[in-house]
Length: 321
Ligand SMILES: Nc1nc2c(c(=O)[nH]1)N[C@H]1C(S)=C(S)[C@@H](COP(=O)(O)O)O[C@H]1N2
Ligand SMILES: [Mo]
Image (cartoon, rainbow, N blue to C red):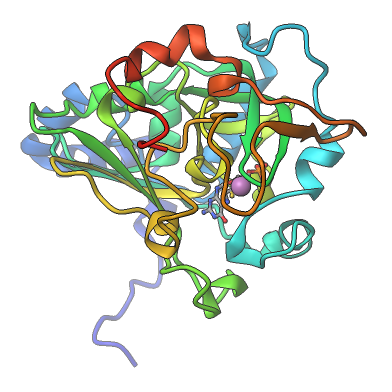
């Protein structure tokens, strides 16, 4: 027996829904109302299934499409969803498809904190309400010498960050994935120091190619690809594109990240796709496009050099790998 006794009839049953919600919003008080005026959607009532139905309704409208991989053929949906890296479910490429149904994605909220004027925890449905979705086609180049061409649905990370007003001390952005060892069986083994953490320099995070993806191939993100919301940084190796993000923290000093902590020789902070810098255990000069049999030359910055090379103009990219 708990300390509280619940009323036999919930208030929501005796009050018409609209009135009930209006009252709750009113009771939230003036400070919250002021915040809500600045952050649209902040006071919408929470419901299970809120973000999936909202996202589905957005996907019914035709999305503006931006081609970012030239006229390259798309990797099949089957390959994109059955050949994955998601160590929370095991280290084999087939594990995520087998075990990721255990990922609980609804309700989902993301905490945005640190060097921002407007830190908050925000439900995914509120993020979706605030952001315009776009369809983009990006190559994702994985470090293990394969690549895919994926039609993502998402929005630029910079739009989400701008809403929370980064301070002048926000030099880096740190991301954290979900920690839930009951459901994420891989987290019962210490392959990496869970939760999975990644980071970007602020100018990389604010670059228009850097995407928060919530779907692919016209549907909400499959669990094995990092549902319900993941990062996509198309000019970097795949491990930077962290899945199932629950926290975004803006910080002053450069943070460490899961893979650089685990093996600094093999995984650098920048991880820009660079055919001239080999991974200690394999060449990165060539890659296999998943679904193709031969190998092809890997392009500097994964082919996005025109867009991103300026970010690194003063840096020696063989030292800062
Ligand atoms: N949380 C989390 N994010 C992750 C990983 C992971 O194991 N856990 N693997 C990374 C690696 S190494 C790659 S190659 C890409 C793979 O993304 P995909 O399975 O959607 O192709 O996800 C990245 N993001
Ligand atoms: Mo990877």
